[in-house]
Length: 205
Image 1: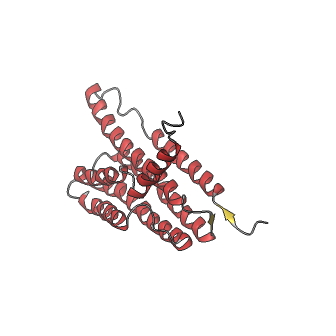
Image 2: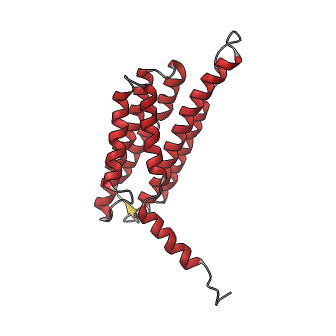
């Protein structure tokens, strides 16, 4: 039995779970309405649900990308990291539930509030996982603490905003997605170093 736990199984399991989550999300896209509903009304409803699905897909994709950045500092894992990672995956698995609620009830205060909660929980779980990994590696996460704090506050604010303006709440969640689409500075610098080291010089050409 090896004396340490490698992160290869953690990577593979996490990728598989996130792939299943995305698959479940797309299954929530259903043709709305009945024969009595006009095509224009049906298209409008479907466009709204597709917009929510697209926002959810981008958010899950952001977690997947940054999850790889976070694990990149790890060589071995601990039991604490394994359970913290499971906590993150559990909260991410709730996102299809939020999509289904909006798909059933429409873009209304309570469904959007539930949908917003489905993004507050992964943000909290992410903070826990990042902290546990930092205790192991003694390396700060690539994403800054202020970025994590602002995004968590926006997600939490969206829960309360949903009861006043569901569309404004969705816009707050979209703002979080836009914020995280920009790669962390440390990742950009690392990418530049790798690109410069792998690009052949003119002298060697």
